Image 1 (cartoon, rainbow, N blue to C red):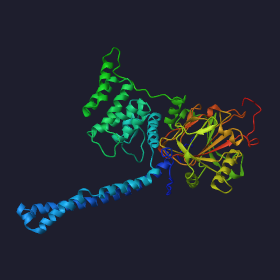
Image 2 (image 1 turned 90 degrees about the vertical axis):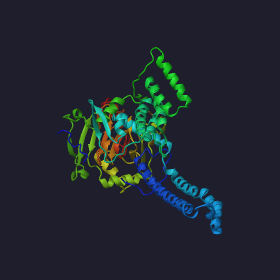
Image 3 (image 1 turned 180 degrees about the vertical axis):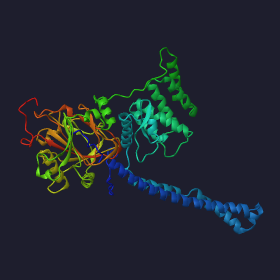
Image 4 (image 1 turned 180 degrees about the horizontal axis):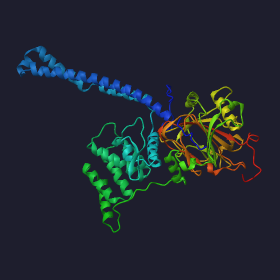
Length: 541
């Protein structure tokens, strides 16, 4: 029986905990909290606008009063001074009323109140690390899913295939980007000397700023001149000197006294005039310094679980699994789908209920922290893993304890601590991903061995949510990927029976394109499984 079960068959907390610096972009849960913060700021701004309108109404009233006096009462100099009451009010008005209007502190007080309210929320606002992380997330999605920047700017997720533009996905909600939005993404790439991405995003920024006639808005950080400046140098760095010169001339038109631009123009003209100087350059995406399997990884992510040649293998099957007639499964077998024989990877459908998944997510929220990776004996954050995670301890009768029991029944393994690690709950961020890695330790100094129960023999990963697009689990050397199937669970062996790591388990969490991805990981260790998962007599097995 062939594999046929691949059907895709938020919690919002009201308490706003202060978010650690630079960690909003690493979790969609934190992004939701940021929405609530902005909602407060909108209220403060509304109060400020109302106060300013009231102040301006008072000024208009004063203006109307004085204008009427000059239009009706002060017909001539004699009329204005003949009546002592009229003369007195004129003197008084010029001495104090104009003074109070011109030097009023009300505008300053209104502005100061708005700033004070803003500062009250500042701890929960995105930091520069968040802006950079969010921008890198967009560039990651651009690369992995071959997205057109020109389409992203319009709020569409499209790529070019066989000369035609196709939709990668059609999100239910989207927005268009402004010239300033694109400028900030391009600037992040520019500051990292990543001119491949800076050219793509700054080209769109310049186009949009031009379309607005160079008009500046007070909320913008960048201008047409800024975008032209960064784009010209980006093209120069990629070898397109002639276009860099053209953009510099355009920039000089807007800023004729800019000495640095004049020097650049002189430099570019000399380069173009010299023998063999290049007038055009080709954009090349920067290669990864640590990811040798980048092409395979991105191809598997792009297919989003659609590898018909793999899943048409007649040795793969689906069944209703009872684990040798286990009493806990006899009356309610689990739908099992064997996805791969080497490595052995199984998908258990409907492993968890929707209510249980929400409970687990809610329990984890207060403990979410930036996910880390092993680095020698230590653990540290890394750009190749963008998510936040929390560890949940299980107890008899608790939701975590019930899940542990269910995992044990399905796998036949001892998952109690320390033979199984505590349940790790993960929420992915903007373009959140985890590039190819092993779950088992590959170094004897790895933190995995701190439990003193051996290496991670198996992984049990539960999908707590669905996503609209992206987020597949890709097995690199095995050459297949598994899409996110809400409420299901993936199981695989990390080690051969001889205790050696199975290199075919190299896997990755593909970037989440659209959606809020939550998973729960249960890592099971070697010790404690002596009678459940016996060693083979064959030392090579």
